[in-house]
Image (cartoon, rainbow, N blue to C red; front, top):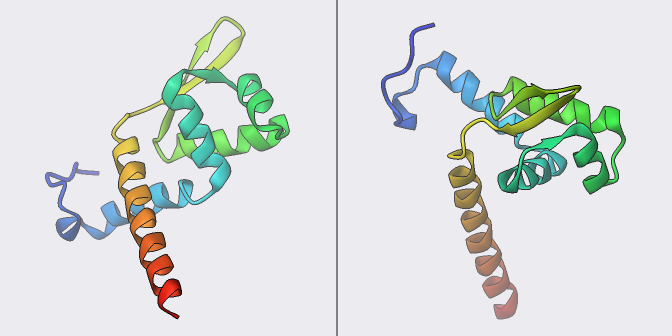
Length: 116
């Protein structure tokens, strides 16, 4: 597939939007967001993440697979361990923008609630 030449959302092709949707779908689970947040600080193995999140190993592995398939994580072999890392730190800009939007929405909601 030819690479898109624009970063402008309004000019993306339908196949490119399918990839965008896949990325957003991968980010739609709180556990996956927590995994990304944990990997922002340092690369981790599946076992590291299991210990952090009190989830089962198969559950963490499933989340890691979804994030990797969406291109958000990459993995490398270090000895007998598979180590996961963030594929592109720009994903945190998106997360920061969404968090800012949520804070604005919460402030508006609180303002409306106080007026009632």
